[in-house]
Length: 143
Image 1 (spheres, rainbow, N blue to C red):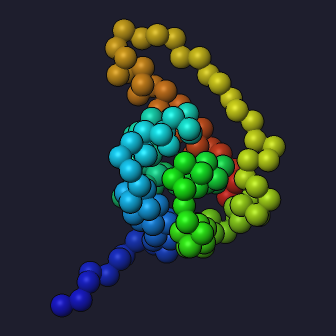
Image 2 (cartoon, rainbow, N blue to C red; image 1 turned 90 degrees about the vertical axis):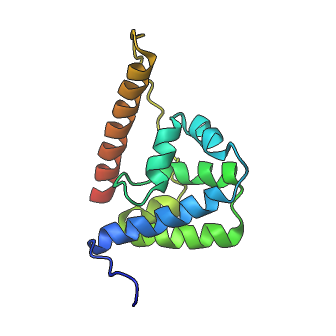
């Protein structure tokens, strides 16, 4: 028998396609790559897991692509394949990729007061980061 048919909407399949590529490429890198990526992006490893797992709907923010390429040392063929898949999933962001997605970007710092439970503090930080990424993605998709 053949493979099961993917019944997800085309947009979700397109996101899953670039997430699968990204996951495969990162998995080929040395141990500790996910942690280095998290540090370079100012996030936690859980965010890296979310942007590389096709089961999660969290998209990869375009502004992180160049950093990922640099940290992971993507080969030219990997870059080309990944960018083609990303553009297919997010056609509204293609212009940002060509013009340098970080041009004009701002870094926003939010102070989170110490909480009694460090794990809860990390969860609060991650929730804020995820909410910000969703808002940014929605705005970028509007353009």
